[in-house]
Image (cartoon, rainbow, N blue to C red; front, side, top):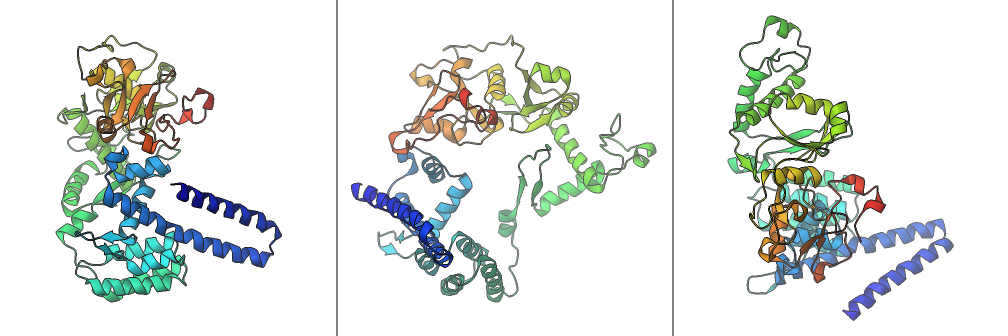
Length: 452
């Protein structure tokens, strides 16, 4: 390890020398230096691929203190889940491999790996080539794939990412001139709906692809509930059953897209009001919202849902008029017991509601899972004598909750009442131990932050 530390220190020293030399170089020399440094930086991922290939082949993430390799990278490198998954996918395609017998094998995309190691391709080039390979039909043979990889790697060394993308699209069309014939498996793999991040105005973008079966259901529901005059929030008494009156139809000024939106809002409300969705993590499936008594009385401000989204107070009041929901108001005390000691292991509904309001989501640093998808976690494990009291409970997503029992992670409540996650020695890289994601105001108030 001393040799590795020395080599890294040497790299830092060389960078410092280059930084000092910048003040003495001409403009032309600066451009040349930038090109040389870029080539070196482009080759660095090849070393990362080698590191990840050995780790994946020789050990398991749980032995390092995490449930998955994605978690190992997000913890050790402080990168996003998306970036961690990209690094792992790149390492699988561009890193060294081993046969079942232990024999060393070349990278899956050998030519691209060699070009990246030489500093000829950057991340954008590699992403374009990866997209090309992923889009090839399954019937394309290994030799054709390898030849295409060689051609794209060679082209990428002299083209911009935009130019390479154009060439890759043309090459894909030449290999599969008729285009892929869709199959049930292809459609199933393509399906998905994504609810985008909530914007400053509270709106969220919905995108995705739906299967023929989903569309058949959608068309039937839309024909009824998205018809003019149906489910109109502007009506004093919206029509959700039967046929709307002529006055409701004539007074409906919504666009088709707006009617579609209101129809699916009505579907969601009907499902929640039906009482047939069962329970989830100890509570009936319903909307859980936290706010303050002052904001509720003023009818102004925003509340926070169990999914982590912001809900304007006017919308909350309108939503509450349609169905029963759990609403936790901090200024009032509940008559339900919050301190159960050792009498029960499972948290009560009252405790879960309070945790939704105060914690809002998984408390492990770096985890973005909102309250709806979390479990109640004993900060001091029940098996070790932990009590089921509100002061010793917090929220954690399923994988993180299970991880504490299976690895060397521990949790505790600090003197500010916030949950700290203490990593095992192999992953203790000085990371934050308190998760402020679900309370972004904590990032803006460093004096009120309990992080080391």
